[in-house]
Length: 86
Image: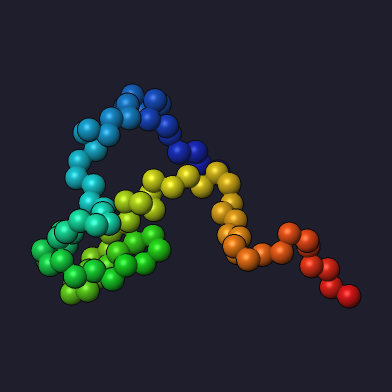
């Protein structure tokens, strides 16, 4: 099985400033499509898609989430006692 070389093995360093243009969809801002320049978007859970040319951008908020632990959704009216089946 082939291994993928790390940045250190390639004599490169991690430098986000030199990464270049990184387009993301930012909530509560006017987002122009990098493909056609329009501002109409279809928003999903992790990405937004231009309604005219179908260019997809990741959501900035989705990329900032940490995925270390599973998300537990609890209903505010939930019972404190576990429900057991008979």
